[in-house]
Amino acid sequence: MDTSELKKYIKGDKVIWMIMVALTCISLLVVYSSTGALAYRQAGGNTSHYILRQLIFQIGGYGAILIMLNYLPVKLYNKFANAAFLIAILFVCLGLVFGRGGEGSTGRTLPLGFISFQPAEIAKVAIILWVARLLANSQKDPRLLRIAFLKTIAGIGVLCLLIMMANFSSAVLLFTTAVIMMFVGRVPIKYLALVMLAGVTLVVVIYFAAPMIPQKGGLGRFMTIRNRIDRHLHGEKAAESKGLSQDDFAMIAIHRGGIIGVGAGKSKISNFMPAAYNDFIYSIIIEEYGLVGGFGITIFYLIFLTRGGVIIRNSKRTFPAFLATGAVSIIILQAVINMAVSSGAIPVTGQPLPWVSWGGTSQIFTAITFGLLLSVSSETDQDSKEEVENNFSPDGVLSDDDSILAKN
Image 1 (tube, rainbow, N blue to C red):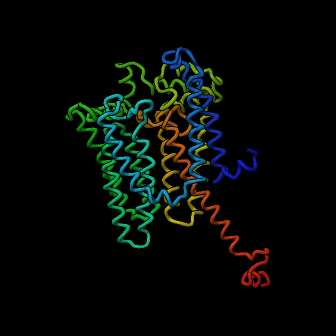
Image 2: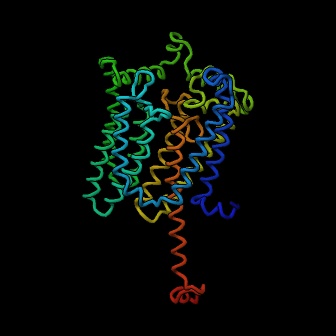
Image 3: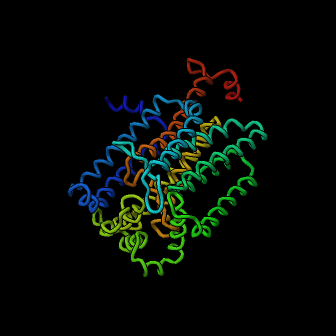
């Protein structure tokens, strides 16, 4: 296949494609250097094992995007939105019953024989589709918009409460993404303010009620949330009693990196951090490439945000516009959470750096989110092309109306 033929399949915003390729290169470099200790513990010292795994899943992600761009029209996502939402709830429930958990939780990961995945990853995509459909179908009538708002809050409330049992940060991420989409979808500010107030109130109630809740199953997650908030607020006291934690090592890594870093592959702190290649990968990037490298990563996501805004603004239909809003919001919010945790700005929570952190099926679902945005971009480009072609006669002569304007 020659280059010209390949270009026919690579559709959508070219800048976003370039950002994805750049993030892939960064990902492979940092994952390779931060999984050395893991390789000796679980892969018999084969340090190339995890970088090859990362590369395979990212190639699979690019394949998923190409399929979406060339064989799945955007309108298909609208039709599939309700089913996607129900499937997400089903898998989240299955995760709570049969899944494996982390600290104080259950159901974070659902094993399916030869592969496992986090049900929250399905929910991230499903929420974007479902909320975009509700908002798109209610733009012509304020009464319908109020109904869509109530449906969204009810659906998001149920899904987020279920996910919260296993992964509090993912629940917050989904909730915030839905609020941003509703804001863009012209839901009145007073409604959104009440929703945000209710969310903050829930976190406060969880914090103070956690010691009184039985620490069994998913309910144990509430005490974990409280402990992490306490750790963030009283870090030095906690460090004296329990030793250094991952967020402490992250601060050390950032301090070691300084302005220009210690050099590619020369991280030492990653050997002491179980999640160095995932939740804290941003701190390892700064350790190896300094604040210059950390700032560079931030610039990539800011460019992505800017290009996403352009795609949203140029979209000529409501559902694609809301779809793009959700895709941009969830990727940017996830990146901000990861970078904020690594830099100590917020309490520790588990969110990978999109398309950079080590992962398996999470890479595929992240690619699908990128694919949604690129699909909207591709469709908008095609609509604009058809509009231009329809405004001109076949022989390239301006239509009568345009000719009159030209003469004047």
